[in-house]
Picture 1 (spheres, rainbow, N blue to C red):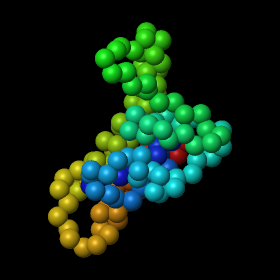
Picture 2 (picture 1 turned 30 degrees about the vertical axis):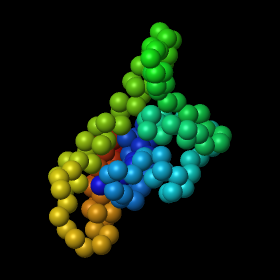
Picture 3 (picture 1 turned 90 degrees about the vertical axis):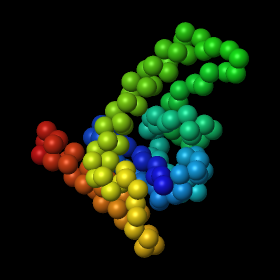
Picture 4 (picture 1 turned 30 degrees about the horizontal axis):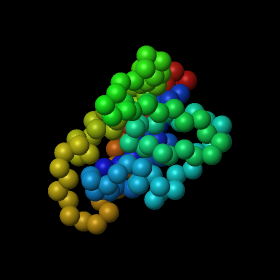
Length: 137
């Protein structure tokens, strides 16, 4: 099972959670089917799994893949490093969601729709924890 997350870099809050899908479904296909909309003028740092996803009025930053039988230029490698240094902030958010072990372990409940409820609760708990830890609280 898998979900896509949209995370705000400034506050480390989860802004969007996709529906739960089977693990073999491609990330970009999930995003296209969900019809996620972003505010105009933002910078979107996305994974290479979203190759070809470029919404209008948004600046998309995505690492460049290595061409087949070739290497990346030094400029491309440096750009990829800069993008990764920004995107690395998302990893603690994912770890914060997975603190609820029911999300990362095999989910054995057979009732329809419970996977989504469990993931929403885990994301809500993460957002609550990060809100309570914010300096302005």
